[in-house]
Image (cartoon, rainbow, N blue to C red; front, side, top):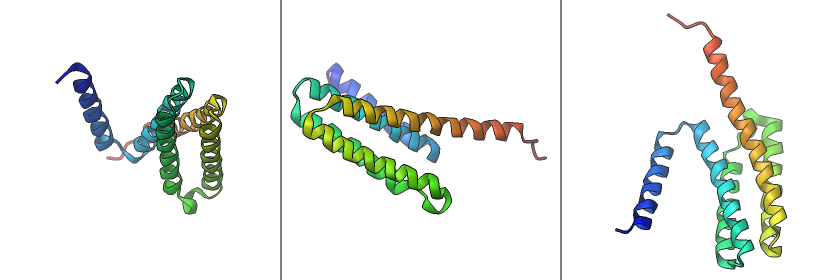
Length: 139
């Protein structure tokens, strides 16, 4: 096994372990990170005229957005879930446009949007942890 194959296998096992050990909040965070990574890869493919790779990476990014949309809880989340759904739909449309026009600026836009969502998601987890720590422990 050469080094590249070993590295690829390690990364696969590492990702599998992260997913297996993750709580639901962490899984969504991993999806956000995966989305950002796929769009970055599509952007590089655009800049290097790698049409097939660009299409594959944008497709994977769209799949992640579709998964995020299907995970939205409209009963509990109500207004926030509706807004996220609309934003994810917009991002899908933008990625299709970026793919068709080879437009890296659109990739930058959707990456920025996702980074903002990801930061808010991480902040929610931090707030919940801080709230739990400030609660008196039960005997």
